[in-house]
Image (cartoon, rainbow, N blue to C red; front, top):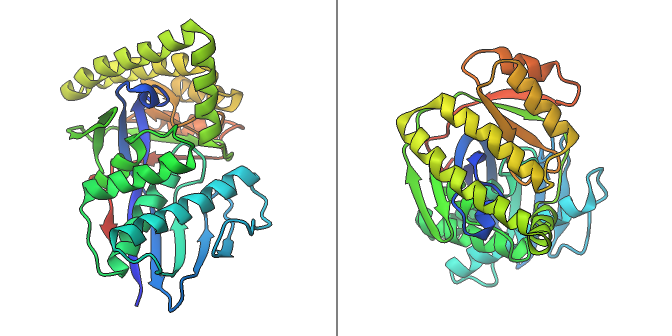
Length: 328
């Protein structure tokens, strides 16, 4: 018997990094999904096969523990984190089903590049817990699933995670997260355009860097608070369907994130290309350091401009994913 679940990735309209410190954030699920297929084994071992977790694809196979690091052309911390997410997701499934000795064969097939700011780890964790618990004959609702997935990211990211990515992936649509307060919110189907530079980065390391800056400099703490204020203004624009104001606020949010040191030349170049192509706003999405930007453009200009930008490995339109985790 096998059980498959999928969960969507996400982009941030506003609020990444600041959300770690209790400020609000508004992520939106997008229709790029991670599929996780689980089969229960006759023993207590764990075997994971993961492909397409980067834009070029790679496969990770191991049994039992993350000590056996695979030989793949991807930064070692990224692979180790990916394997850590899967291990912790399996532990959450075992706990939910009261089956501490359960073993699994796990196959991951993801449309979301790993470490690119598009919520790959959250989608894999949410889909993995859902598939593994259902394989063991247990169903947990989306909110419990989101909470268990958050516990996974909190563990793997050394206590620096927020609930935003995992809640968004579990619930779908647009969500608002402020500390432990997580709610779904209404949103129009915004004209998202995503640009990806082909690189992967360690979310935990970038989050820790902002934390260190915030401790050292008062301006960094003020910048985090300013992002929170911006998010609150953005919520009103979202409720009104005011795309022009959303775009302007996205531009400001990108500048504030740059001040916190989490942008990169590739991200800045893609942001400016999207704006020059006609986007009403553009910003990095996710942890930063490289990875992805998100723009708002209801025409073809931003996508075309990104596709012609040397720093952009892939550009695509992204629809809002109304449905979160689901059985496949």
